[in-house]
Amino acid sequence: MDRYSQYTDEELIRMLRQGEQEILDYLMEKYKDFVRKEARAMYLIGGETDDLIQEGMIGLFKAVRDYDEGREAAFFTFAKICVDRQLYNAIQGSKRQKHQPLNTYVSLSDHEDVRLGEFLAQSPEAIVIDRENAQLLEQHIHACLSGFENQVLDYYLRGYGYVQIGRLLEKSPKSIDNALQRIRGKVKECLGCV
Image 1 (cartoon, rainbow, N blue to C red):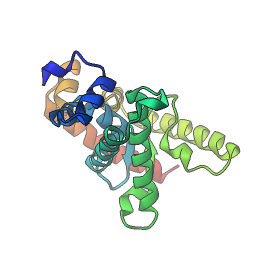
Image 2: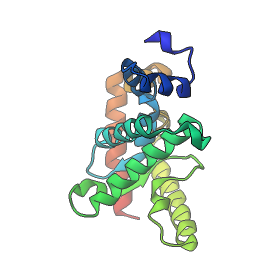
Image 3: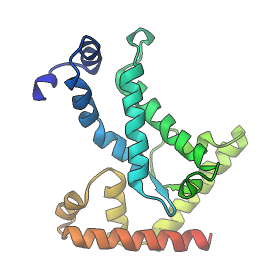
């Protein structure tokens, strides 16, 4: 698979369409961490991050399938749009009560780019209010967490795994897992009192 690292994504897509099917596996593996990061930026009450990761991987697959070089957009840009759209569709679909945990989510991302919650807004005023509410909620959550828990949450939202976070903070993976469990509980409590 390393033999593909010398090519651009756009070149790889061309090669895939010419019959080199193993390129699909390479691209899915290459962008897996990106999809995890996007999915982890959202906390689903009662849901699993794995559900969102799976939806994001579907979006990535669609990006590989549908990418058109003629549109003059880089593959990464197109892939980000497809992944975000797939996550958004999963949340929209949850409103039909098909997936109850997706009905409520809180973005724990500190990114300035457009988040899915903003897609749900009906007007520019609602977008501004949603952003302010999200910022206030994030501040409230961070105030509820200990310094260690805030560090763990920050690394987790950046896409680091339990083992990586443990190494960075010089703690065991079990300690990180316990911290994430406490964080989930405290976030639920914070949401109950907001």
